[in-house]
Amino acid sequence: MVSGKYLGKEPLTVFFHHILPKEKYPQAAFDKDNIVLLTFDEHTNVESDMYKYEEINKRRELLKAKYNGDLSRS
Image (cartoon, rainbow, N blue to C red; front, side, top):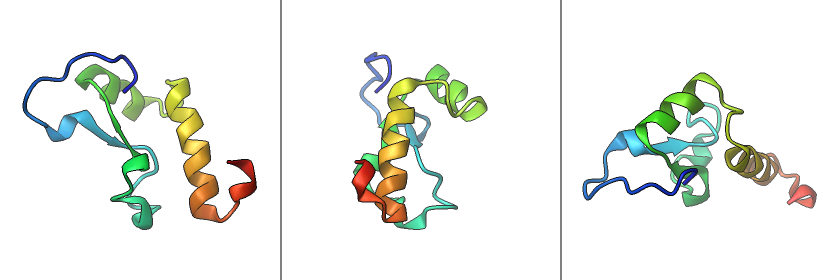
């Protein structure tokens, strides 16, 4: 999670964000490393600017290496 804020007791879909898009990386759709928990505002921010959060950027690069077969960068 980017902010560490409490998200409440109910796991709403708005709190779950796929770092690599499911459409482009269907093999990563259920990979727990590809899912990050975000507040509603964080999710809105990352949907409008995918490079907004450094933590997500780092994870995206590791995931791309994993799914594109280039594990030497991870």
